[in-house]
Length: 468
Image (tube, rainbow, N blue to C red; front, side, top):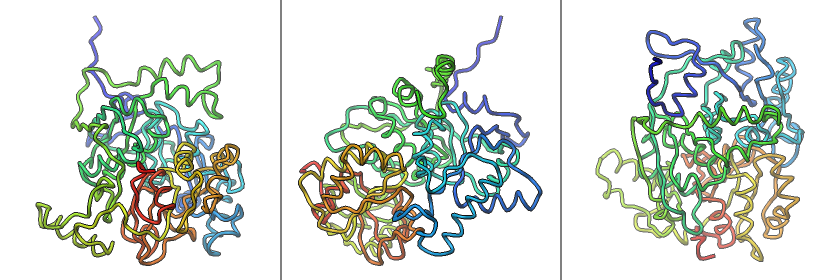
């Protein structure tokens, strides 16, 4: 009689399928299905060339320029500096040298790697995916294991199609209830990180479950998994379901119609077994979450828009009190100040967190018949998103409201391509990080959802979108 296998989580099932061997000390040698690379990969390619190596499986490598690309044009010569232009050109040369799949800056399929990979069907349930960027975790929204790696690890993947990794602990985040009007996946993640802390998921992989997650579109789930990194998770995941299958079907790199039924049958088996045990459980009531905004220099520094800047003395540990005081000094805020109504200088809608078509629709719906009163830019997450937004009239809505409509790229999220927030300026941003200097030296960032960003642009201050 065959011995019954122990109940497994989704992470365990996918990990086991990709484990080639396990070292006696613990780490596993894993097979990698997709290696996604961007301009920063020049370090890895230099290493390969120095050692006389070539990419082992070039058709499983996908290169796209996104971090440094200009958003004001589609040529490398449009870049902010000659050095950045050379980096983009070097990337193109490395892609050709390696024979890998390549989406150049002028390609209709170009975009932020974490946006274009799902929309092209490069990301599929059950895959093991890496990229030299921490927000690779975004891809877990489709039921994949996806995580960021360094360039030395990237060189190893390019040369061998494998990587050594230690299996993380598991955390299940259950979000039940129904989200209220004006509340989005971005607000859910800011509420979660505020609850567990920016280090709250350290050493764990998060699986998101619950009614709120089941009701979310793939685009909302992508936001959840994208920001799992901001809680220090190794990556985030959502089990594949009918919503996933409908999203994937027919995309360029998805299974063909002849392969479809077999693929879906396998994907259905990836879900966590009923009796599987997680190392940690966290629950949220989605009905209690309000539109959120950050006040400090960490994503955990978040409260409802109806809240106020906290007093450092309200925190228990002396370390946290010092950190809060330092954040408030940098952000030039005083305890007790209401966040609703706080004056701003700029608005940025974009990034791998919130630049998909659903995000742009939500923001545009707030703008109808209204005008931005402060500078605001919109940077679509991909050239495909940009084209779709233009076809739907969304781009026109932004432009009529006074927003700048840009080409796709990481833009003001990373602030390494010429798009920056000035010193001392305060920006409402749909990106994922509000660290000191993240959007430029001295920049002050308030993380919000796309709809909240649109509301901020037309009011000139942080504003509860539910009033609009």
